[in-house]
Image 1: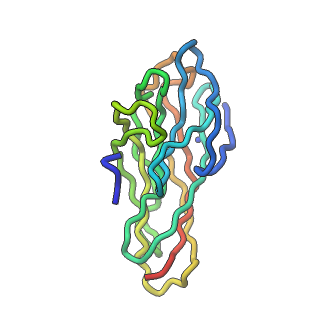
Image 2 (image 1 turned 180 degrees about the horizontal axis):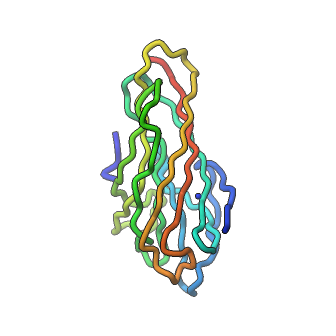
Length: 176
């Protein structure tokens, strides 16, 4: 069930880690690349790199059963100091012809699960997968790469007007 909720390349850890955020260009403002966890729906925070047209490579994985849609990942840029969304997230472009199932992308609105900004909902670019190949072996993994662009990013964060998130994702079949 869904929540009503990648110049400088920086290798980031998978969504299981939580890191301190690098300071933004303007004092008092901190920009975070925030991920939604697919299990606990809490927000993980990653550092970012300043520069023209930054790209953020991230990785995530999930598993699920036949004909069950599973949320794999959700990403947003958020200023957690001032509780504001940084730019408008775009849909991830994902494979459309997949022999094992269907990748989907949508924008979801959610609170930050880490407890920050409890009165504010944020827009997250979200990726989900539904395994539809019935004869797949349990443990078979399907891989995809999605690219989302966040636009209208305020210059004060030092990121440029468009920011690309390149998400490498894996989905493993758990059976029926």
